[in-house]
Length: 84
Image: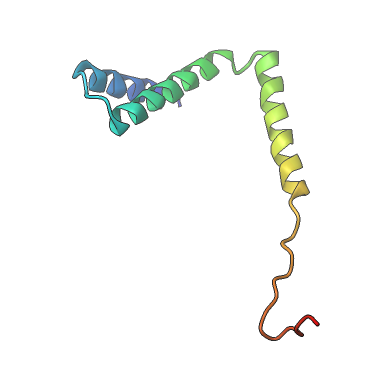
């Protein structure tokens, strides 16, 4: 993971060395750089107790959201009785 993040950071830095013009591609590249750089940060702190606690809270939130999902309401069809 670290090698992949390092490679992506190098690629994006190289892209910016060419001084690209403002636009969607440049914006996306900037965000990719931030994400790749964040992966490097995670690799540094991943064994720290606050980092582990943060990860656990994210996982619990996802589980909670999934359990709160409701089944969709039944949609009327042509075979249903018309309402009076």
